[in-house]
Image 1 (cartoon, helix red, strand yellow):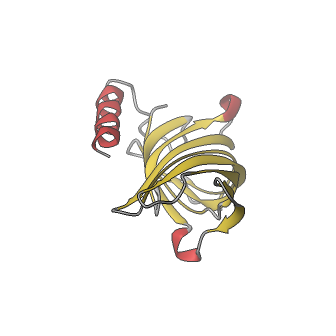
Image 2: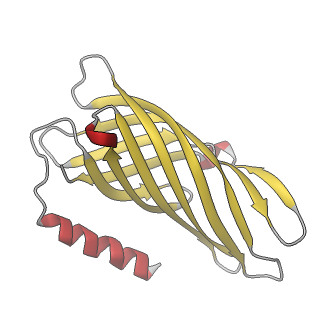
Length: 170
């Protein structure tokens, strides 16, 4: 956990030298924190220079003391559309694959999981600041494969709302 936080802080200071896009309500790439049940880092980039199609890569981490530790990767393809005349506010929908690994602290086999993650949400880019904020709903449908069984897992509703805060790079 300390290593992940140190990596984020190092990336933030490295980005400080990159010219941020200030004074605009659009962006082509951004990096930041993914704050949810599984927190982590997010990197969002315009797909082939588009301002309406994005790829969002999320590395997640979750841990419960004396129970388990989980790491995951999510890659989302998102379509963004403006909301009325509110500059910088857009809604989006998309989907993409997820994959991860869960290690249990008890005598339970570790598991690899993979699946599909649909997403729907709101995205806002501050006009005067190099900051982007997203609030979304991500119901992960994952298949868990342990040593003896394979089963589907659907997260409860209270764990599906996600907030991402990003520093826009360009």
